Length: 231
Image 1 (cartoon, rainbow, N blue to C red):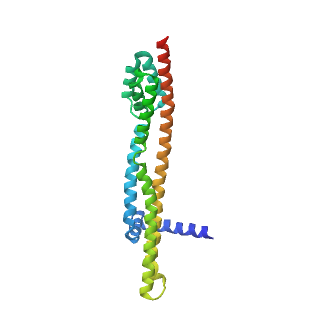
Image 2: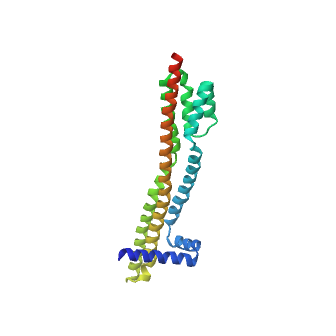
Image 3: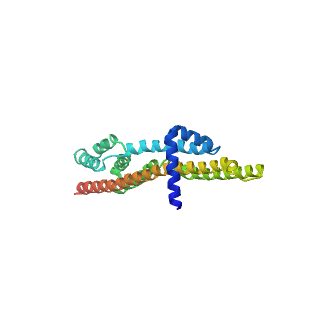
């Protein structure tokens, strides 16, 4: 019964939005939602701006790791560390930066190169995660602002009842509308940002896994080169 009522109300809202025009309907509901709609909209705008920045950054960070490792290995075999560093400098992304940091210390020994790779890998991971804490903040803040608007709307409804000394739908309609609209918009904003946040986490995990796997291969290659020099 409750589910069917919810589905019917949702369909009515969609039908109303289509009949009035989506933009006009949203504008009207935004104005009806009261003061707390403004900070909720602010959470959406700033959160989406951060999401777009992360999308651009992570898209530039992606690189074909297997092809890059092959190029570095060939450069090490033919031209040594300097040639491999040149390949890294011409390749964008965190994997290339981590490789370059390790190759800079390659002449000091395997342990020094490995330590440099681990240190710079942590720095690159922090760079990839930059801004995610603020997106997480807005995911939490938007529904909280919505619930605060709900409390404000209910207070307004009870104040209207007190002033009129009676209960009728027309008296409490404005306060209840504020309560429901702020909750709705706060939850919608949180859901939109949550989708982006989870996508970024998945992409960062993939990039970090690629960095770790390729770093192991680089260390193994450097170790073999040092062993061959000893022989």
